[in-house]
Image (cartoon, rainbow, N blue to C red; front, side, top):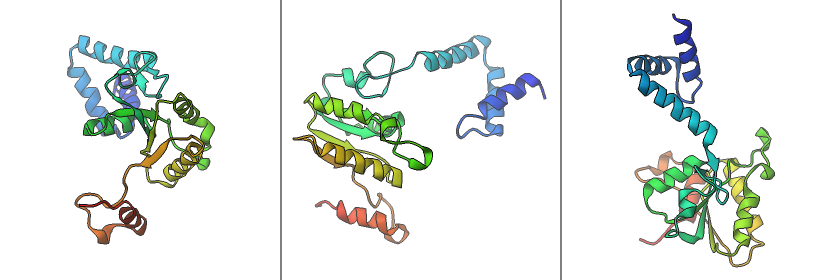
Length: 197
């Protein structure tokens, strides 16, 4: 095999979810592309990696100091949804059911991986709340031990902030799930988060 092809396949295979076979398909596809289109692809990736910024308010990805969501004055500025990663913002935005602002922590507390509260953007969140516009903080973190630990830590920190309502996204049985396949903790969350019909 060509050393050039092997190098490209090796680099593409380093991407999450891309094995050597998929990387080979991508590489072969790029060979069939017009050279100009491959240059555009490479330039876009390079510009993205080198020029991307983080929003100074919410830590979301941005082209400027302020992301598009934070700059949008039509959004509910009294509600902030706290998420782990940028991809979580995209997931919630795709539902078109939420019109508030976001706060991206950049991960969750994980002592096993050496990630403590100071490694996350929790202080940035507290600074936003201290500015006085926020009335509700929605914790939309994963239901893993680390996610629950982070939610607990943030809710304790927010307990010192007067007038702030702390909520979390509903957890429990998903639509179409059967009870006999759910674990006890999931069922407990579903019962705790029940709502009227």
